[in-house]
Image 1 (spheres, rainbow, N blue to C red):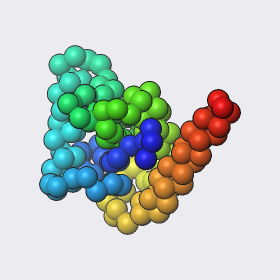
Image 2 (spheres, rainbow, N blue to C red):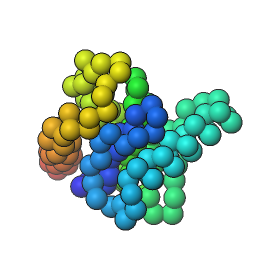
Image 3 (cartoon, helix red, strand yellow):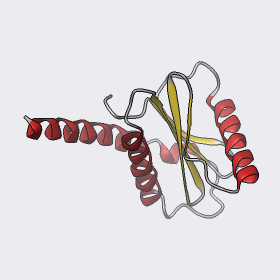
Length: 139
């Protein structure tokens, strides 16, 4: 998907993956979530600032914290970083808006977030249409 994330995770305050969209992972998503959560915590403790992204040879991982969740997006390196970060933040804000009434002590039932997949797909389509419209107006 142009300018979009290949994978998208939402982690709880404890590092548990509560939502996963994409299928690039060949290892357990909870293991990835725990590792990423530990990296973020380490970075914030060491440098006392928020980590926005980490670049690797072929991919970039983006981070966005809002309320009680950590949103993590993966993209190929050739994707516009600003657009990918914007997409992650948009999805994060949308998730928080949709589930703002989540009780402080929710029962950890992840089924309540299943319908968010539809929102992710809808957002992907909207972003592609926006990109096509921009290119059409350039011509």
